[in-house]
Image 1 (cartoon, helix red, strand yellow):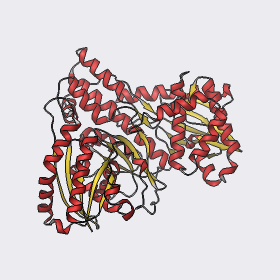
Image 2 (cartoon, helix red, strand yellow):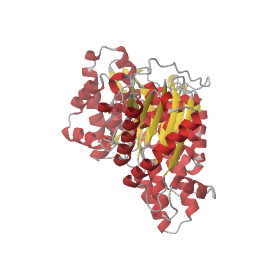
Image 3 (cartoon, helix red, strand yellow):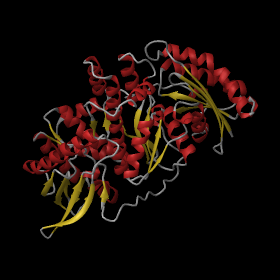
Image 4 (tube, one colour):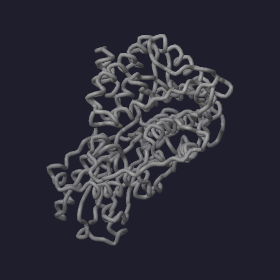
Length: 536
């Protein structure tokens, strides 16, 4: 079967032709460059209308095919700009009816993942998808691609574009900022905002623009902007590796063109002994071949036809039922013998302390961060974690005992807790038997929050179960706060992690957790924060 795909979610028009064996037969495209400002939806729609037919002709010529050879037409139904999506859908409908072949609409974001897997050979990666409109950390889990982390405000590509326009550098911002950043190694401090598995870029954008107004050298600001934003992206991807146990990372989306981001992400992967993949650049940005490839993968008579060709500007990655992945390969990360576990932030090494079994949590240096930023984060997080673990006990929260803190080496020696992770407990248990335990966990976290302690990374992997008693570990992103916002963010991390690892029973378990937490205001706040995610 041969599929022709039409892409046009934003400013790029793309036509691709792919066959069922995974051969990319043609990839043709063109891009709108606005004279001033950003992308206007109506201008993008008009651009698509002018370029779709000529690009289809180009693709047919490139593939040495005719329209009679096409067996399926696919198009990007979302997410994206409404007027642009409507233009693409209209063109796809017309073409499919004209040549009398099935029509299928697909998810743009998943298209990036699948063309990445096809062109790199990655099997089951954690995907960092970075573009003008999207910033997502994606992982396939139990029948769907799950968004295990994302921006809570603007996407990284949009952030770069807006900064570039506001300081007078023009559009598109990514390549311009990158060029200026290459002129210096100097940096200034900008906000570093990681919230569990999610990120926020609006504060960095505002701060960088203010630095420019203060007269700070533009090259230095651009370098700082990249170093900070990309370090955040690397950190949440690193957390996703640790959380999922996967041994592959795939980078895709238009911002993958940035050499600095690629270098930093490759460094992070090397430090975690996992493989790094990135498609050829022509397949990183928006293109028609990714739409054609996904059209073939998801082809099903039940989802084809004009009646199913509606667009969805807010089409989320995790709304798609993935029917074309039947099994998951096993992942095996080989660690050095002295390292028991390699977490996102630290190496865990088994040791002895006063004839007791203990662990050393060594917060290792991250080569993808600048030395100044790295040392600042390691010192702050080591000090804060030790304090939070100790003080949580005052609020009836079970935590390991701290034996020693070494600030010079950014390490903590603490009690080794012989227990299993909540994640493993859930997987091995009859769910109906877990209600009391999960209630207790919710009650414990409520006590901790009442003590103005925020965990920061509240996942089932960081809740241990010892003799049916929950023990909380890994306060690496923790802090002190009495804000309902921070408490809600803490619980949202827990909710999202449950949805990723045990989607079928996540709502029931989180409901039990909230019963134990017993606060109606927090339920409203979680819902409010959750809806800040893209397209919610």
